[in-house]
Image (cartoon, rainbow, N blue to C red; front, side, top):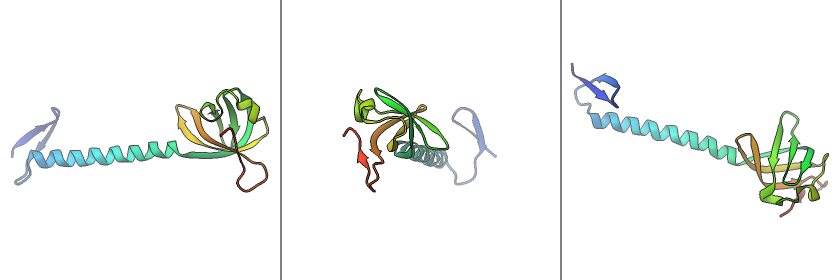
Length: 123
């Protein structure tokens, strides 16, 4: 039985008809599959939509309580430094954006104004 060293640390027995190229192909397929599932998870984070009540507002963001979680929302991309001119504590909003590093970067904010479509804020 022959042994082959792969990637400098893994030793596996060779089998008739199995070549290093086959092993490399399998490793590449596994690597691509793993990357795709990681990318899918990251994409899901980029399209997060949450609804809740604003607890606190500052010039370029606010704290949103969804009932089971609080989000620190960065609204600068949507409102610049004018968030406090458009939103107030107690407002109910739906925010779409990207959750990154513990902060929710908003790219759309819709205020509940009693209509089915709501009121788009700032843009």
